[in-house]
Image (tube, rainbow, N blue to C red):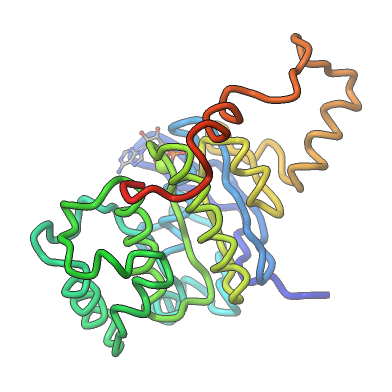
Length: 254
Ligand code: ADP
Ligand code: MG
């Protein structure tokens, strides 16, 4: 049996009187893309930030790659990559300069161009962060998570607000990161995205996990209850029309 790379047991988080996370438990296997799904306010970001050691927990046990979070949070920091809120980037540095700055923060020698190539931003090496499109900003921030060659990468809503091409381009990037050996834990509000990317998903609501399985299994379970879609599905949807008309290829602006 494989040992989980992340194990969360009975995690609770209270913000004052407010009980935001009410006993969450799950395990993530090495090489998995694991999704946390759920409405706004469900407790997804709180859970991720606790595992990332950026937020304190109220109670519960967390192990990351054999490291107990209570005993050695710094050792966890060294093996994870966390996508920061893009608003935090110095707007007037160019991407090469920003990569060097981040390398310094991680105490790592970086090859900015190689990292930018990894996320298809080599042409933007001299562009300033503020000049990038939404999709480019997301790709750049994902590139910064790769600087320390992390075993686990945390992506909190990396595709929110992106156009369909940029969103698909990020899917390819996430799959490529996993292909190269990392474990990915991701949140998203797009169920099509979770279906394409995630090996397993946990559905979180009001601070609790209410379902956890492979997307395919969750769908089969729903169908087995006798559920039927209210409307006959067509062979395509409006997103298919959009992609068909505007093309799959990544735009300069995406
Ligand atoms: P999600 O990422 O699923 O949208 P969050 O983990 O961000 O949810 O938030 C869960 C709940 O905790 C929300 O009701 C939110 O308002 C609350 N919350 C988050 N951060 C804080 C904080 N620093 N102080 C007080 N309440 C917070
Ligand atoms: Mg959130």
